[in-house]
Length: 320
Image: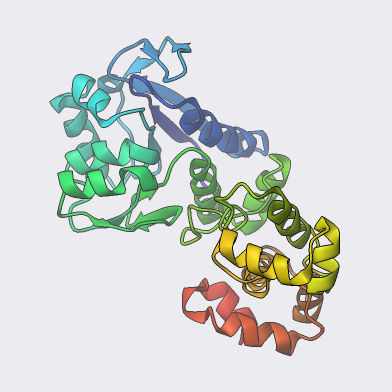
């Protein structure tokens, strides 16, 4: 349902990661440009903060002078360390954020901004997430948290937590979709040239970056070709000719460097592409199958069903 007069509060700590703020802000700026009534309020414990990159952000408003309502949104941006939060955030902040929570204000954390929500007690016994690099530490500090490792973002009632940086954009688009519908969210994503809309349970580690922790340039070339030509058929012979090594050597080296076979790698990528198209397009199943390199929708269904339990409900419905 469309809402007007919504204030988006950006709580900005010392040593803030700039993209944690700017990515989310740009999504809502685009929504405002489309005519939705969003207003922005940049708040903090200090009126001037220095970002992690050294850029100074000034003219912030003291958060104590604000009173978020039920329809408003609060984003708690991430900092470069947990220790930075302990240095500046005081009891007044925790009273402020708990008061907003009692009103059912939408409260979102970006990256390790989840630390502040956890310290305020808002994540106790709740499913939540943060950047993969902080998962273990956050769980140690706050054992009552039900941390979800590897996902992009998580919703638990009125509280949303995200993995950080680029995933803040994913979360912002999800909020836009909740409030204004998928068409508006997709339009904003397109205007921002977001490559693909990602979903909350998508892995933090992009499938396109997985199995690439090696330095074999020839294998990288093969992987790049497969990524950009998923709709095409290829043989070990044709791929080996691409990098001027024997088929046997390519097969052995690919598995050694990536940990998977060429067939397994291609299937993983095709399933990811199919999930994206099934979620973000109105293409017929047969056409999606062809785009993913399968001759029939039946072939696609057989492959996708292997991953059925991890699929979003919308995809399950389309494939049923």
